[in-house]
Image (cartoon, rainbow, N blue to C red):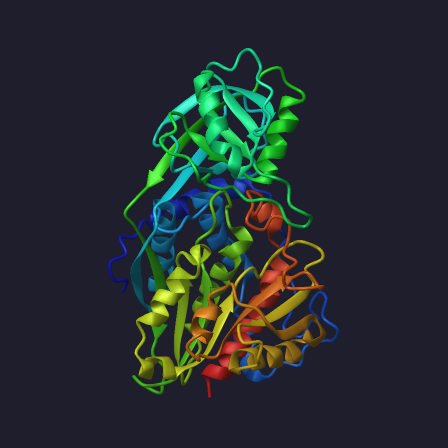
Length: 463
């Protein structure tokens, strides 16, 4: 059973029906075990062990978890209440599957978030309107007023009716203190800072503006898509009243969620780990990054309850990855050397279901750039599933939780669908308010990812 979980799963599960009704869902794949998969170059040649895994997997079941995590909970910021709700939900599911489940807590830095509310209902509601709040601005307050666009913060064009308004401006960090001070002096009730547009396919994320001290009004940093939508609305309406709230989150504790089932080899049997990170960045519902890797891990955990293995299986969901791999690094730091030595392979799954058309390559990403047990097993599974040409790597790249394990010599790798030119080519909704189920998830890619990792993990764990 879960240790110190404080679960609240019933309320979350009860909300899924409402989320489903309001969300355009991706189509579920439908293929038999021996059918050629979409994008594959040949029909699969599965062995009897692969069939045990593939026959049980369901992207529709995984989608139900994703509806809770991304659709209902939404952005899951490390250490905040939203992340804890997600941790409790995941832990409860692993409990129900029969795993020995525990939360592994660790401290993280304070967070500062904001929420934007559209008073007139003009702005699209199919994306997140969470933003970052400036820690040096007014916190834990709610203000409301019409939006006034003053252009660039470096050279604002102030209208006569600033008093009582929310001012928006193109941001530069150097101009922030003077600009915010002048906006407050003119009677603005709040400031929304707009990021510079990034080069396609990147889009700027929401941010918590730094460089301010005791500003008398709340100051927000929005994402590129939020900036565009606000300005588009201002171009066609006479008035765009918004309400915005800021929240400070202090004294935070984040959690890793780990479910374990001991293998036939006993207490000292090798460990095979399947994992992802369940947190997201401010402003992003995190459907693909990394809700997809999270629900892949949860669905494989369910399937492996019916499959016996020689190795001990661990299914882990890391907290606070987006802040610098904090959760996985904390976990690895607690492992004694004899425990590190037990790890046969760590399969980290980060962004495994994007619907972005150019993301046709399944990357095998190794922090060292070298092959290891994890990359070899996925490569072999890809060959059996008919996907070998789509698999590229191992390619040297960190920036996900496999790095924490490889830094101490554990065989690990990250697996992800990304653009074919480079693993740096991530989908436009990456880290944005548009990382939603409807805008950024393919159940076909999720299903293929689950098959690849499931077959690979079983090949390592059964021997």
